[in-house]
Length: 429
Image 1 (tube, rainbow, N blue to C red):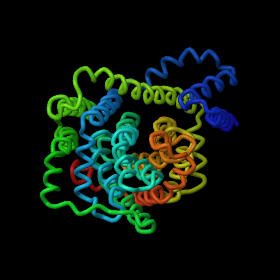
Image 2 (cartoon, one colour):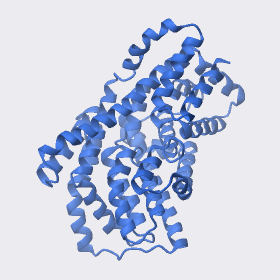
Image 3 (tube, rainbow, N blue to C red):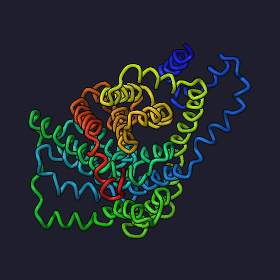
Image 4 (tube, helix red, strand yellow):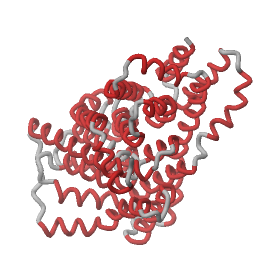
């Protein structure tokens, strides 16, 4: 009974338009008052604070800062030009460039919103100027931005690792192949849509043009090598890697490309601070809400219900994936992680599901949530930038969401897609 009350109150608050973090916090407070345990509310500050103190979570503000520095420092423009020379001649032209540029930028920022708001502006302007529909341009930009949190470095992987104790390095490795498959799926969808609508394609770049653009983008392209190589080589931790990424982006923008000056830094830092506060506030509120769920033994109830429902690993994965997709429509992805991980981790251990694979499954499912109303952050971000109404953009996204969903199914039922690189590089289980 109390479980239904909790989720009814939470969904009601969200549907009233109350921010997700506030909705979770209010739900927990109201539930404790309803149960006559108001004295527990003295623990609110302590629980919210403790949810954000994991050392690994320090990586989040620095990866956000790195993304902001790259967007301001001219790095995104150089990445876009390289992608244009590489795949602009394929049917769909700048739509294909959009996807490939996002795949490359993914290896630098780890944030879908940073991709959509920074590189997305360049991509959409180029596509609209090139004769593409605004709705098509916006849909590709929103869909391709979801590659960011799957290809390492990845903010969701950092959060998952901090909450579960799973190696962030293994999670980063596990994201490479699924991220590449997402890119291929989106490029296939762009190809089909472009052929149907007869969208243009670019003239094939000469070898010299390709080499010139690669040379111009060489230093930014070194970012993933520095980050992943440093982590795997034991030079620094994922948190320290985020600091290194920020310093490298600062060096490129300030000293090499000189796209901004020291006077611009306070604004860049402030934007990173504001975005980081939003993320950490969601984590802290979700931590308090998760504590409520644990006190009410809701994880145990869910485990008992699901194990009574099925003894099949495949069926259980289907049920969990469906739950994650439904939750993603209403709750921001980071909050879904913090709320559901305490529920699902004992369950996947019981069914012998690999924790690294499950991290990739959760991240991919949350990417679909970024594209679905009423809470999808990438959906709303791109809609705001492009001036394309949410309803139109949601319909235009369907072919690309189908492609991402197929990749999600593949990762869910073919473990080696996500586990083969951790096994080869780090000897994962």
